[in-house]
Length: 440
Image 1 (spheres, rainbow, N blue to C red):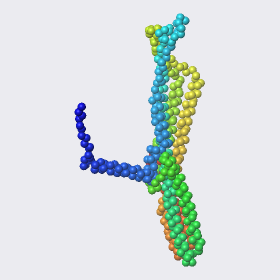
Image 2 (cartoon, rainbow, N blue to C red):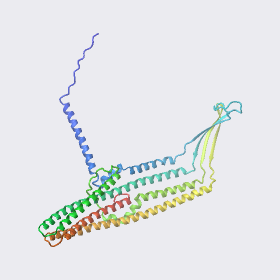
Image 3 (cartoon, helix red, strand yellow):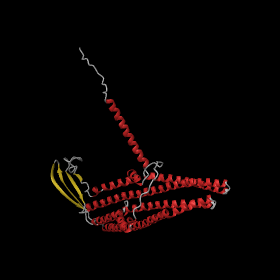
Image 4 (tube, rainbow, N blue to C red):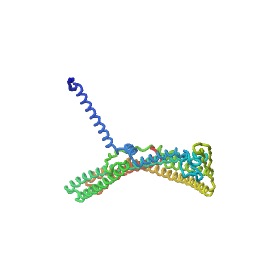
């Protein structure tokens, strides 16, 4: 038997396929490298500004995610709350022994008769609508709680970022002062070597340096604790790196901090007031539903009756409950009235507390703004002039070393006052925005 002979020619790459394939790989590697660099840059930038922290927390914080899921679950309860209950089917086998003429049987064709009944429970008119409305209001309250959780988380992140900024700036200032104390020590050593100053000046400068180093240790510890707290808010490992805060948010113009304007915004936007308002409306609907329980609910049904193998009769059924337990119902009605009054009182108490906090924080941010202006325009320039005069006087032998150290401490105190005022204003701003439920 002859077999066909085939010649297999191995495929050889064309002159252009290899360069194209290599170019594609290079492009892919460059894209991957660019993507990795972009992600790394985003990770490294996390913490520089409040916006980067809030954006990360919104997608990763488990507490906020849990509240969103609970709000979604509450929304899914609306449809079942207003739906009719499932219908019921019942069957009855009557006279299963046929007056004792046969053994007991469960066969519908051999018993005396078989009754079938399909029934449906029907609440009194309007009850289903009220239950659905109550579920809708409860869902609104759940949405308000989710928004309140985010607003609270947002305020905590803003405050933690401001405190981190304060620690970083304080640490920078401490290092500057430490460098200045090294310079002052050298000046004191030169004067001591020349017989113009006592050895006590050199020792005092060294003591001040030791104190600054101890303070740096405390600041580093505080920075580590704040970083761990911030990472907890972001749902990151406690030791994850955070970028150094490079700026604070700009403060709103004083015109935006008018109490009357903010009061209206708080009443309409504050999550806690929104939740309490939803509870009031839910309590009103619950009270109305309780009063509807004075009227009976119905059950209707219909079904055939089978004799042996034939359907010979049909039945229609109407059933209702008789509301005779009036003492129980009156107690339920009084309960609903009390719950409504309690909801209204809670809203009033929450509104009073929130508006008091609003007034307090508006006053606080204004005081912080004025303190920063005073430190920047007056206190700090005066302290710097005093230090330069004291340094010149010490070098000329006109003032002692203690006066020079006191002038140096005044500079640091002025700068600290400036930073504290800035951070205090940020803390007050975050509280105001928390009360508003939105940014200014």
